[in-house]
Image (cartoon, rainbow, N blue to C red):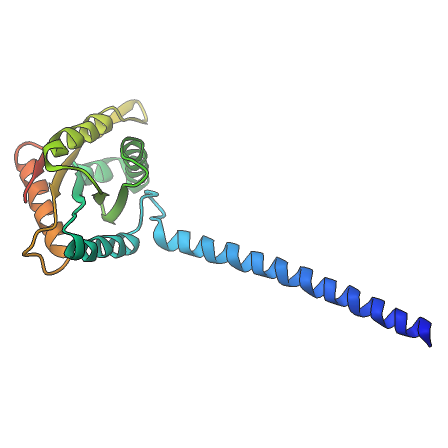
Length: 203
């Protein structure tokens, strides 16, 4: 009888240990799956920049913070110069390579606290906390210079890239984060009109 009781205890202990191990394995697997899913949602699959969904959330958070503290990050709008021509001539797969190279280059220039977001097509938005107005043009030019060093082979040709950039900040009249995006876009359009590969700011 005592032997049976000891055996039952042993079986119960083994089962408890087994269930505990299975629970921990499943918990770890679920955590990994959740993180992978979050990464897929937050990162643009082609360019490896942050996704627009993630970017809109972040800009809105900064906008709410600005309404409380009055502290605004610099908002940067980027557009690739003549990207449609590149896609039409060399194909969309090559265009994807160009996007990846540009994002990789810009990420090497900006800080880890800054964020580069694919807004759509060949448009990107950057969030740069702590960047003062007097340093905007210098910062933007540094990005332009970095991108201008990119050389991508296409058969017997070497394709160089360039971008146009616009900056803005939140201001007191803004009612939504989209207002700063619109001003940065205006500054970007000004850069395009001035001959591309330029940087401008509209407050």
